[in-house]
Amino acid sequence: MAGLLSFRIQHMNNQNAVKTFPIAIQHLSQPQRERLAHIEFRLYFLGEVRRQDIIKRFSVAPAVATRDFAQYRELFPNNISFDGRAKRYVIGSDFHPAFTHVPERVLTALSQGFGDGEGPLGGALLPCELPLVLNRPSMAVLAPISRAIHQQKAVRIKYQSHSSGASRRELVPFALVNDGLRWHVRTFDRKSQEFRDFVLTRMESPEVLDDSPVLKHELSSADNQWNRIVELDLVPHPRQLHPEIIESDYGMTNGVLHIEVRAAIAGYVLRHWIVDCSREHSLEGKEYRLWLKNNLALYGVSNLLLAPGYETPT
Image 1 (cartoon, rainbow, N blue to C red):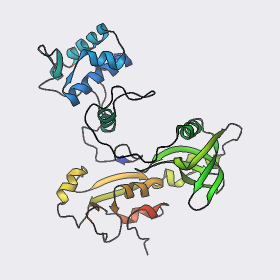
Image 2 (image 1 turned 180 degrees about the horizontal axis):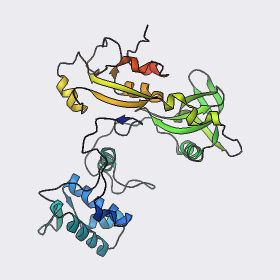
Image 3 (image 1 turned 120 degrees about the horizontal axis):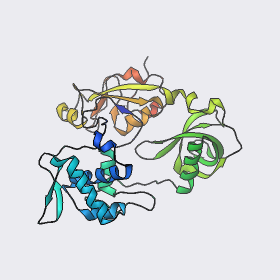
Image 4 (image 1 turned 45 degrees about the vertical axis):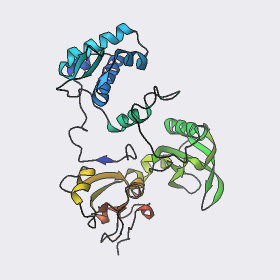
């Protein structure tokens, strides 16, 4: 569920903790730091790197790439060795990463390649199979919506809803949300006068409204569900025979995975992870690997219909 939603996992270990650059790196220019980080990336995850990799990735002259390797070897001599026979650099025997490598970005690079704009550079670095994406949003829809979010402006759209059919709406969007299957926009809906989620693929003909002021009650700061943080304690489902495996899979501490999520997206997270939210862990099936231990934490969350097995307290 890499990069799925805006939640914070509180059991972060040292590998995921934010690092500060060594003093020597801090004094380098940003472009050179990026090139050195790429050298380290290929050493760390592929075990080797060649000068041509840097030349191709960053469109620099051979002399620049040569200096980058010399700089990296000077700063981190234990991380890199030169294989003269194959004319390549290989990972050192006492390698310790100097840069922070975020798992989501690493997996994206390995499975899809680097770069943006025209597309990934060089393609996947490793064989990888990804889930099919069945409903990609149109760029003609996404671009105006993202501009409106960035510029804090309203938009006018055509929208298809299961409950009300086709309608015209004026929205004040402020965030994109991925529920694991599709992209939503968190927004203030001027028609219902409520904060709601709208599915990007159901939008048509968005128009940014330059002459429609956004009022205070339409801003994200007024969205109680968005600003409320819910603390959830997830544990291995009591019906599972090997809880220690689940503890390892999810990086639990003392048998508990403690997460913080926005109330507005709690239902999405619990549905995506297939968490049994019933009070007595009554849902059956091997797919229920997790149970929400503190069920009462969900009280007042608006999208609880999505939480598997949740029952309103009596």
